Amino acid sequence: MNEKKKTSAALKRLAREALIGRYGVMAGASALMIALNVLSTFIPEWVFPGYSIFSQVGQFIISLVIALLVSLFSAGFSRLALEVSYGQRPLFGNMLYPFYHHPDRFLMMYLVLVVIQLILQIPVTICSQIYARTYLSQTMTLEEALTYLSFVLMCSGISTLIYVIITLRFVMASFLLLDYDDISGIQALKESSRMMKGHKARYFYVTISFFGVMLLAVLTCGIGLLWVMPYMETTIAYFYRDLKGDVQ
Image (cartoon, rainbow, N blue to C red; front, side, top):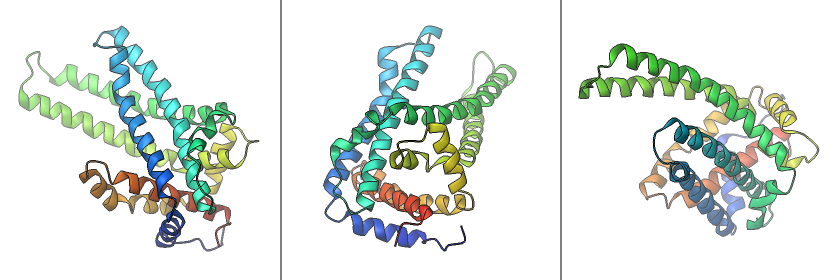
């Protein structure tokens, strides 16, 4: 653990060099991930339209199932990034790698993260309901609506921040599952927590350093994401390998 690790700039340089000649497949995989995430926001309401309790429960179940499926594709994207980091030609078909290499391990890992997120969302929902019943009138004014929206956004922001702080230790779990077929989802989470001791701030810095290019990518109507997503994921793959100590 005392071994000097590579800087964010060094990891990003390695990623750029590794991606030369390999952007085609990675851009296609990024397009697939974008499409899946966009569809996942609309499908629940298409299947269960309306605001009844039945519709809300149906939307929640569909959202959960889709999120778990998308998480498998996300792990497949990480698989491609690992291949790039090892100097291999990424195979688009390996986006499906988690589907036929004990998918239950990946699903268990992501389910734990989903449960953490849901638990943190409970106080937000309760506080929002209490605020609405206490301060909002039946004929809500624009000022009341804006104040309520600000309160909900503040609570959601705090919940998201706590979630990020808690789950930073688990970010290497999917890479561990990709590298080792003989460990379970829970074991991967535990090992990731061990690996990330003393490195969470460094990981956060590496990811936040992409904020500028991510913003520019969004301003290009998302087209730039086809370049940024492979760049970022390959950098994270190098971060994982750097923690293992196999990056020269």
